[in-house]
Amino acid sequence: MAATPTREVAHRVFAGEFNDATYTFKESDDDRAPVYVLLPTGERANRVFVVGTLTETEDVGEDSEYWQGRIVDPNGDTYFAYAGQYQPDAASMLRELEPPAYVSIVGKPRTYETDDGEVNVSIRPESITPVDETTRNRWVVETAERTLERVQNYAEADPTQDDYAADEYVQMAHDEYEPAVENYRRLVVEALESLEEETAEPEV
Image 1 (tube, rainbow, N blue to C red):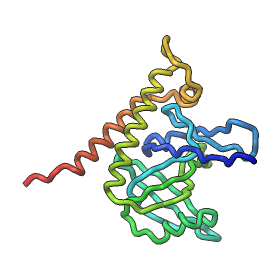
Image 2 (tube, rainbow, N blue to C red):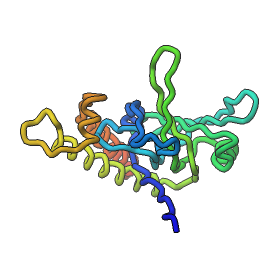
Image 3 (spheres, rainbow, N blue to C red):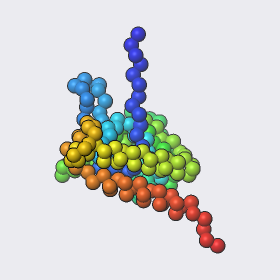
C-alpha cells in the first residue's frame, strides 16, 4: 500500500521576510515535486501560515472572479493573497469578509516576475479564517520565536565564518541573497514592541 503523502509544514513568517523570499526551487525533476521559496533566514517553505489584518479586498479578475486580499502584519508590512475558481472557499471568504478584520491564512507561496524584472511574492491560500485579537497576538509571539530560531541557525551556519555548521539552505540563502539577517531580528523586535504598545493599559 502506497504511503499517503504528508503535507509540508506551514512556516510562520513575517511579511518583511516573506516579501524578500524571491528565489524558488524544486528538489527533484518530477513535475509534481513541491516548489519551495527560500526564506532569507535559510529555510525552505512550501506552505506558510500567516495572521494579520485584512485591510482591503478586490475582485481583480477579468473573465471570472479572482480575489485579491491585502493583509498587514504588526510591522505594517503587507502580504497579498489571491484566490479564484481553484480556491473557491478562500475566494468566497475574501468576497464576504468586511475589512478590517483579523484573519489567519494557510497557503502556498507564489512568485511572479513583473515586466520590469522585479519578483513579487504572494500567497495562494488553502484556507482563510477570521480570528480574534488573542489568536493574532499568539501568532505574533510564535512567529517571533520561529524567526529568531532561523536567525540563530543562520548565524551558526554562516559559511563566511571559520567555525560554521554546514546547512544547505543557509548556504543557498547566502548565495542567493547575501541577507543581512539582523534585519529580520529587527522585524521581531518591532513586532513584539507593537504588541506591547497595543496591550498596554491606557493611562488614566
